[in-house]
Length: 104
Length: 232
Image 1: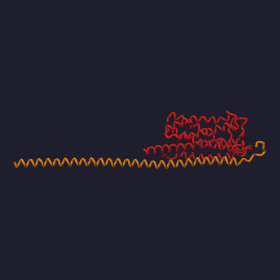
Image 2: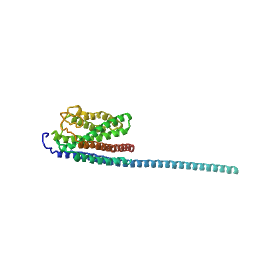
Image 3: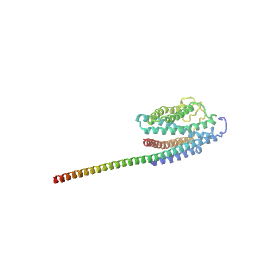
Image 4: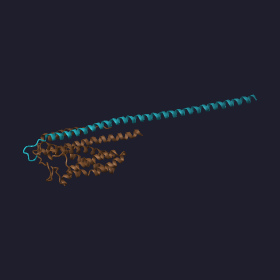
């Protein structure tokens, strides 16, 4: 080839070379874009799941607190009720003892 | 998730414009080489791709060393980004070289020292990703990857200097070449402009892709952490 007087026609190799270079660069760019989109989707989905779980945990905590509050209120009421009935009983007892002593 | 910085958007646009100008200079502005013909134009992109890829491999090695010293996950992300982009550029360089070799050397491939070291380098970094895929623990994966790139980065200068150290048929366009080299040519001033501009353009493209890939690595890291958090 080097002993030829005219320049050889190697255009097809040049075209092939540049085509391959541009195609490979384009493929890599597309892969970057696709991976980025997928990651962004994953990120938003995971963020929403995380927020949901946080909300659920908070709601659970709230209901637990409310249940605990209700329990304490109920127990206080019961205590108060038992105290008042005990008072009534003692009052009734003292009244009864007073009337019996008067009768005597 | 952070919005894309304005500087990166500008760099994206600049990279596309520079690639267009580099293509124009290589295909239109530079004169046709008298002996090889049009295929010589492949040289501008071939060298630019190879140069940028080898720089990336060395950068990955440096990032690996910094990771081993600091144990900062960010350096692992930088290392992976550098290797991935360099792998793509180096593959393009090898394929372009092979296409150039067909009419000039009358063969697609020969086990010449430069071609062999280039193929070995490409395979070393393909194996790097295979190694990473095989390790589940992120800390261990990063540590092994860092050590691997540190050792692998030695292949980059060996490949670069192969044509200067060994007797080879691969041409050395810049600096003295081997007398046995086939396809050597003297660059005219216009060829030199196209060549240097291609080097510059691909350097900018590399930086742009590198920045984008690092951002993607960070996002990937965030997703991995979120997955672990949600799975708990």
